[in-house]
Structures are given as C-alpha cells and as structure tokens.
Image (cartoon, rainbow, N blue to C red):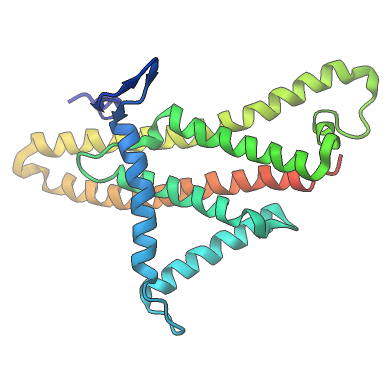
Length: 240
C-alpha cells in the first residue's frame, strides 16, 4: 500500500448546514478522541487522590511539575496564569501523536490544518497577553528600541513577517516529524508482511521503532509546548 494513504482525510459522517461543512472526518474524530482520552487517562491515574500517591498519581504529578517548571523557566514572572493553557496544549498534542501509533488510527498531528490552528491559537494568545499587559506599547515589538526611525519602513515589515512566521515554524516542525516517522513505519511494516516467516527480525525492529516513535511523540509535544511558552514569555516580558 502507498505509505502516504494513511494521511488522507476521509469523511466519516457527512454534515452540511447552509454553506458550512461540519462533516466529521477521521482527522476531527481523532482530535476529539485525543481530548477525551487525555482527560480520561489523567482522571483514571489520579483517582482517588491520596496524600501518599500511588504510581499513577505520582506519574501525573511528575508530568505536571515538569510542565510547570518548563513554563516557569520560559515565561518567567506571572507564569502561573498560563499553566492550564500550556498543560492542555501539551496533553492534546501528545495524545494526538500517541494515538496515531495505534493500528487503523489517524494521526491528526500530521495535518497542516489542525496543527496550524493550534499554532495560530498560541500566537493569538501571546498577542492578546502582550496587548493586555503592555497596551499599545506592545506594538513596539515590531520596532525594537534603539532602531532609528529612518529605517522603520524596512524593519517593521521584517519584524511582522518574523512574528507571523512563528506558527508556521511550529506547524512544519511537528507535521514533518510525524509524517516522516509514520512513513518509515509503514514501509517497514509492509516489508514485514511481504517477507512472511523471514520477517521476524524486521518485526522486532518495527516494535523497537514504535517505542522510539512513542518517545518522539513526547519530545515533539514538549518542543511544541516550550516554544509556545517562549512566545508567551516574549509577549509578557517584552523589553523593547
């Protein structure tokens, strides 16, 4: 089978209201499943909460403290208000990456549209935070302090393009990692299937690759989260 077929968005439940296409696709389905699975798994691991935590609760608390420490280091003062947003982004991206490794699933984080929407949301939140805290002074982001007004017509467009490019860099980094990893797994799995009994060793290699991809799923969610935190920190603690 073509290894690119796994990235085809297919309509599962067609639904159109007026001119709005609200159909449920395999991509939107796994976005919903990622959100539900993330909430359910976290709840199952920490319930019932104990003063002396068991393994599941300790795991969740360790992960939460890890994300909090990341936000504190990258955002700086006032980071506490953005922990729910940062943690939610991490869980959503991580679960999307992880669910994509299960057979007959769909990796929505391999699609430009949903990942780009998350990235644009992060950009809008950071811009909103900057404007809320710094009012009109936030727009000095596009003309850093010390830049002569004479070259402002050149600097401002460059800074605006750099600002708008942030969600693009976030999107491409995550999407390309997911696409390349899944294509490799698909090719290896096809080789195992066609090799019959001789595919035992490649099958072991595929199992190792799946574990490796699970680690990549966590790493990419973390990178996505830390970059989102950096953009929030730049907006919150601007120095220009």
